[in-house]
Structure formats: structure tokens, C-alpha cells
Length: 329
Image (cartoon, rainbow, N blue to C red):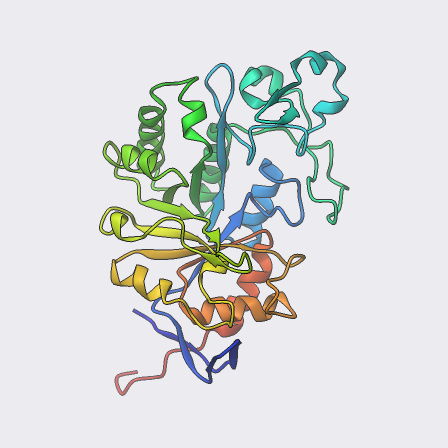
């Protein structure tokens, strides 16, 4: 397997290396909610752009409608990413759950949701594509990926189930529904991961499906509330998951020295996919997103979630070096 090297000065506080191994294989670039830095997130348009930019995987977050359809949204509430606040016909659906007043996906049928139009939720990003897209179903996303595969462009699905505890109240056999879905995707030879923050649900799906599992870990603020530490231990998942999806803040201590979590995961045979790199929201240790990406590649992560897949791919390409010629060449 090809080993890639980069002669890069990596400065993460006290960590300095003049030449480090990047990876035994290419770090995968995962389009976070599609190419969401450019288009409204979780739309077919955002996924298409990500695929055209060369993303290795696109990431659909799944939630469930009132009538049991899996659709792509990051949040169960709808006001941030759709025009529902302007839709007078749905005014009476607004309600308060856990202190948040909004419209919730599980109060709507798929047909009703399809009448909504999507919008850019982040105020610092362009709104020129607002009102053009709709909320896609997972079936529509699979069809999109199939079409690209038929045209010679293979891209994988890195699927996350949001709040399975809540959606199992709508559909008690959610784990079985997902297992059937993953079997269908696998039969189409589409690369795939299944990720979730709920470790119990992740393991439940893993018992009835061969899908590669990724345990998501966000971490928690430490006692002084100035840095992040693990809130879920890795050991219980050793040998049971294909990887860990880690908040990038968990990779280093406050002084920039490595926490060792990447090596620990690798020693368990698990990959490390980190989230989220954004061109317009830099990690405080870096002046440019290119610096941040080079540091992550150099640390040996196996996957990077990013809103701007083209940038991550450009930096990855810049770090590739040809293998040295052998005597047999």
C-alpha cells in the first residue's frame, strides 16, 4: 500500500515535526451535509456539487417524517433550513419541545415537507440558492449516487441517524428499517459507513447489519471549560466499530500537543474521521484552512468531514508525492 509523505512544518503548540507520514492510504474527504459551504445543506444540489468536486463520500443526516419516511436534515426542527416560517398553511404546527419553539419534521408527512423550499442556515454564507431545493429522501440520494456510479464516478455514503431515541417513538423498528436500507445500498456496491452518537443504537444496528459502524464522539469541556476531553471512552467499542468520528478538538491538548487518541484508535483497528473543517470557521490554532488541513492530514486521520470538499481535496493533492522508482521499474 502506498505511503504518502509530506515535508511540512507542523506546529501545534509544542508539537513540531519536519517530516511526517501522512497516511498509509489517502485520507477520505467526506462532504459534510454535501458541499454545504456553497449550497443549502442536505439538498440534492449540495450533494451533486460535492460529487462534482471529487468528494469520496457524501454525508446524509437522517430524520423521520410523521408517515415514516427517512429524509435528510441535520435537525428535527425546520426553521433554520427551510422557508416554513413563511408558510401560513403550517402556522398551527409550530410548537415548543424542550424549550425550543419551532416546526418539527415528525409533525409533517413527506408530501407536506416536499412543498417546503430550502435555504442557507449560516448567516455568513451566500443565499443565492435559497428557495431552489427541496428536502430529499434517502431513496433520492441513493438514486443520485447510483447515477454517478453508472457514469463512472463512484462516491460513498456516510450516513448518520439523528436522535434514534426520539424517532423510535414513531417507528419502533427503526433499526430493522436501517438494516434493510444498508443491505440495499450494499447490493448496489456503494461504499458506506453508518454513524451515530448513540452507542447503544449503533450496536443494535450492528447486530443485524454488516454495515461498517462509526461511533461519533463530541467530547465535553474540561473542568476549566477551556478545552475538550472525552465524554465517551473508546475501549468498549474496540473490535466492534470500523471507526470513531471525533470532534477535532479532541486530537490535541490545550497547548497543542497530541492527546494520542489517533494512535489509540488505530491500535484498536479503528479509523479516525474528524469533524468539521470549514473554510469560514477556522480552528483557533491556525491562520488558514490550508494550515489546518495539512496538520490533520499529517496527524494521520483517516477521514475529514468538511463543508468545502474542494479545498480539502486540493490540499490533499498538494501533499501527494510519487512513490520512488524501484530497480524493477
